[in-house]
Image (cartoon, rainbow, N blue to C red; front, side):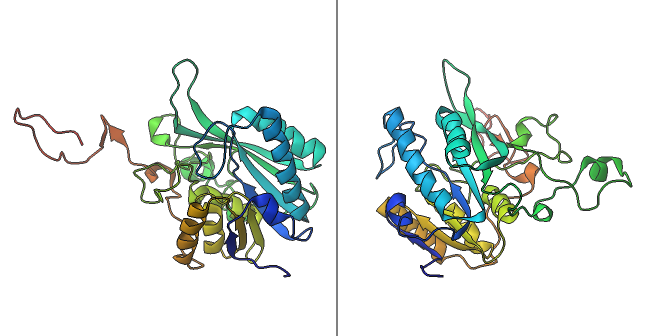
Length: 304
């Protein structure tokens, strides 16, 4: 391969991608700034709308150029520009949308005059709808026929997950059962062991794990133009993929390099892949079955 891989480059992604040859990337995953005013340390997330869309047009064009003829592109994006970017990828870049996944989580952004936001759009795009990588066997889940009904007709290998990924299913214990086939991945919150602590938009490893297992194979090259906290690269290394990332922030780049240095291929992914144990149940701010930490002078239980 004529360029270095298994590395993160501290530079603007457009600057980093332009020197690369066409058709060298098997899978690209991008979680770009959403242009909603997030306080990044090296990027202004308050561009004029036309300016933001034009910037997205330029970096997505580079990603598409780098994809192999059978390459796959996953894009994570918020409501504000989901429609524009989906149309852009299909009409201007000639990609085919295989799936429109809605990643739902209950730790959403609290709002006072509108419904609280608790989802992200994930667009699964391919260059050639007749020739792309999708390893269904790597991501199958048990079906209700297997787990509940004991139906002999059930496929013993399970079935594919749905295209809505539900987080914190314990908030709806009667609505989401372990035998159902919806994706459960908790957002990486501040109390999670997985949380790096220095990046506010950290993706869960289990979410990226499903994407990389389905849409790439061992030894193939995974690209992330906005490395951020480094989750895509970390998962790629754990799953035996080659990886290449770009990150504008010098501080983030240094932290990601430290994260990657601590990983060995074959290491387990952080976070739980089991939906109902991914996040502890809570009641009145306290984990269920947790013993009280003490009592007040009046004999009342303390709350943590």
